[in-house]
Image (spheres, one colour):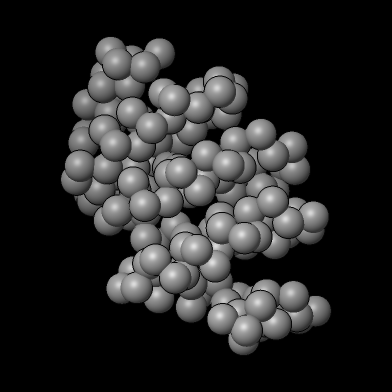
Length: 151
């Protein structure tokens, strides 16, 4: 983890990107220590660190959204546009696989930041449109599910 700590703060983007890529891959097979490490950076002073951590844990969420949703929830009030946009993006990316839209939507219903939740629901619907060949639900099913249950 000390290599991750060092790489995450490198001035050049290549080591930082390598850390994010490694987090994605490692969290897929060994999530507990990786997510524990990532959690310590969710409230870091540097917004770019928060954004990179948010993006780094995304892949784990595509199969196991319940593992990362509590971490993502900690970012719901982040005022930095790049962090917020990445958070909305990640929520959309983890919500299109089988069983995931329902898990993500139910968790979002517990969040306080209703504007962010609204934006996330729009992104989830849009992802179902963009990934229509891979998405668990059709665009209309995703839209109807969110409308019937959360909006």
